[in-house]
Length: 388
Image 1 (cartoon, rainbow, N blue to C red):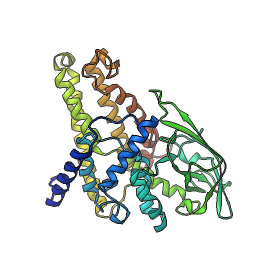
Image 2: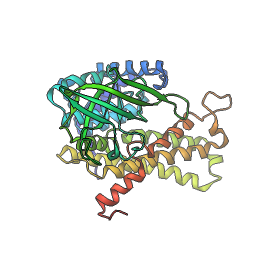
Image 3: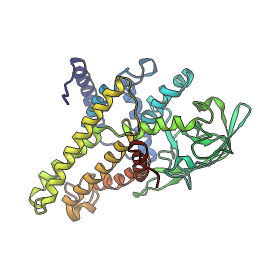
Image 4: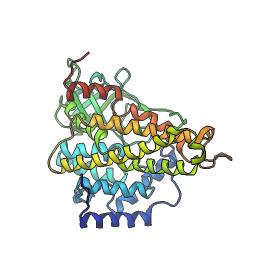
């Protein structure tokens, strides 16, 4: 594969690098799983959008730059190189946004996308339910059509960012007689409606990164439906494809982690080389991150030519989630006993944020569809293997 950038792409890289150098906060923002950190990140989203960097692939009339996926990847590389803040509205801009582009009406695009890009409206997901975690076809929450509204009853759980989010997108069963992936409808729900209760769920670090959402006779207008009634599975699979295969976890995220891992190894080489497998693990991490980057460029080229993200998004999801876990495990091995210290501890030294990253990486094999489920998809849909 020959990777060469055009003059236009190189100029685009210089533009975003210059803007980020002038605008990225000098000090890290607080965690967006705190009230103040959420406010800070929402303000950053607005500032980012003021330079039309909120979501570069969106059309200019909706606040974007009309960039293709190669330019998006260039943007992500510069964003992560600059150490810019994490995107608090990633569920919206990376997942729902592209889905709206494909299935939304013209009015829905005008209504939701600009406010999504500015951070004025932050979104959470409404996928998982008690008894229907990674198996979305087992969803039981109901949406009954009554006149010009749906009346929703049920419960969603493990909804990321739901504690302070403004809207939720999810699937609800509109045909009570349906089973599995039939009779489901994709609905956008404002979280300030009467009958909605949001109950925080603490993460490993104690912060409320997740929440349960309870729906008790919640009335949602019909124009909040995305796609056709009863055809929500198709819409949701488009969203899941973006989540697993391209948009949610750009290669630049893992390339930066790999680069930090190399630096950590070099700084601790005398002790790290006592175990010959450590050097091999660091090299493998760097090569895997580069391989994922090149594969994503290849996918972006195919999509730019009119292709689609298919079942191979499941292979991507397994690869980046397990790569993230291996890199952080290797880092903790290099740090030894110091790995258990938080960065502010007196003897922390160069532990940085490796422990925090390790804890978060454990969720990577669960969210966006558990890796066990993704392996079943690969076996059945890509390899044609029979069900067990």
